[in-house]
Image (cartoon, rainbow, N blue to C red; front, top):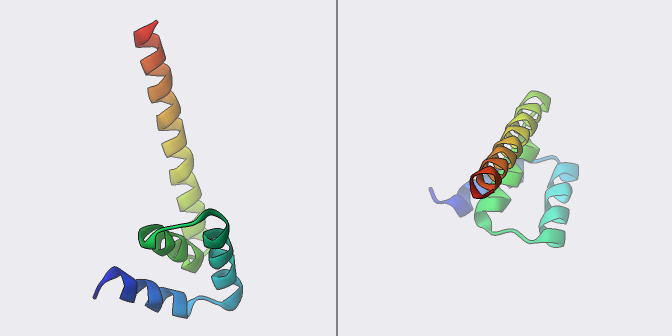
Length: 76
């Protein structure tokens, strides 16, 4: 099974409002097949899964900030 088949399968199982939410983001910001799959998986997740995704995103943002600060301190 390829990514396109997986994407179609997950998209087909989404409630209409969530499908439209994903399609709206893709239309507004653009997305390749990988990103559409990620967005669709998040949209298919429940409240707990979405909360964990938010926590991961926040952690990744914090890591980026720490790297940026560390790089600036090494240069200065």
